[in-house]
Image (cartoon, rainbow over all chains, first blue to last red):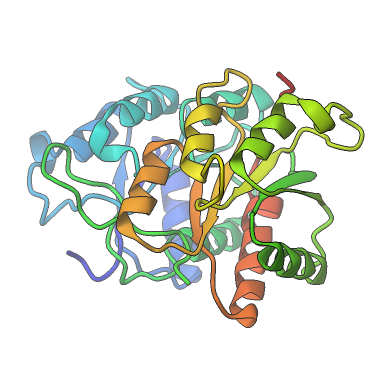
Length: 163
Length: 149
């Protein structure tokens, strides 16, 4: 069990990946950040398939930041898949996208997103938003992950802000 | 991007409700707060049954704060019911319970809670939780459309 909860970022745009990485650094967020570049890769990571077979190397995330528009399998499909897996019903999924179309917001919640965040345009606000997300979902970083390895018995869940 | 304007709080303990109301006011939360005292009353409110038919006085909420241990219908029962209603499936629900037990947290998420906050015992801590809730859910987060079934 890692000391710091892992954050998994599903994002296909290289620029956005760089910005988010840098915003995390600037915001003092030291949780390990793993990046997958499309929906299929996100599913492979969560299932521990292919190059992600080693959980020591690719631990289950405590939080998934999910872009919506991605190649192969989009964020909506990933969400739908996640909520069909028994082991991932408590995986916290925050949609992080440049779309603020109310239809996308509605569909994301309908499919089981925990929260929906619109990517800010300027860097300073990305830093602020990263801090807000980290502070809310991963405040007590010593607490273990919420996601449970499918079919392998429950890990300890966590509250979002344990008192 | 929409921020929640109407928060419905299901809380059976009058004292907890009082302190929560006070902390929301202190934090300068602009949303209106509405209270129900148990799970059955929450369902009646959302369905507009009995005394809750007047939507001016009892508007559809765009965020729900849900206690777990309540008389008649508890929070789990309410969550299970909510997520089966086509129009309420996407309504953001934050569990606000004094229980920090794994079984309760897991079950709440399994039933579709958006977030789980542990209710602190000390008033100073409550004010920190309310500020956090405000920053996240009332300012940063994009909320879906509310829906009147």
